[in-house]
Image (cartoon, rainbow, N blue to C red):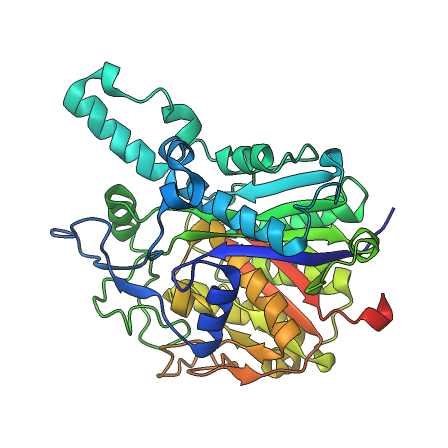
Length: 417
């Protein structure tokens, strides 16, 4: 069985908007969600900026009990899943059999905020002060579990944990599960909430985060002066659905998912392989499976973290996978320049941006890119969004541990359905 897979719904809560439409509109306008950290006092920290979700009231959105018993990353996932289901129409009675609806939602870190808070309670008050909800609040599979419960999704459920590649892998694996008949629709994406002291300290000390205190220049992917990424948070969940199932119920199709690559560097726990072999192979796998033709127009939403090694390696990987001519013809941008690095949620946000770029014929920019780098010499759409009439898009992700994931999307044309 080999079936076509499309995107019929999306939900997002990000540093630039608390819904998918708000987030997309902000990205197209080039609005950054990066600012001074408000979640905690950064006195004594070398890092003082992050991309925080704004104005989120978990109790108002989910109810006091649900909010109290779930880590912030799961709260984000639940809100995004509600929006995704509603926008797809799958929340209607009888729209899909529960056994044919799956959930592939991951988190790179899980409930680290809850872990930190409960360790403090243990230290301050002893063992009896630790919450009985500690374990279900910290384990990285709980976003998928809670989304499944909330939407009565009884089909295949797979929480993915591949660090920064998490939600790209989740979308890719969901695509395969639907393509080969294991489900008719899957909620796929990721959630993260790691703007807490211990996480910021750890990422700072491993030299991953920028120490630039200026929110306007802290995250500048592919720029010669880039010096690390900015931590982000939030969630994004897409509804992937089998095409005939979607058309039969009159669903609105945003774009088609048609290829997936998944490789490992087997090189280093945090640094990408400087040969770019792993990401090159992942891009090639997605391109080959999809039948992508760069000559028909290609947008790449790059991983583009604003670290020295990632941006250089990713540029090299695009050249090796697409050929020098193909890479130079591609239109590229990094929306992390506005959302920061949302870790396990970032790939889904970027896949959403790819789908909407194809639907709306516009590419969001890479903001903050002002000084070219000789090692990063492709078209990164600096400063402002640009019109785009191409047929194809790629979303690329590289994660700690050497994980590489790429999904290929195609503009949907009802005449070809």
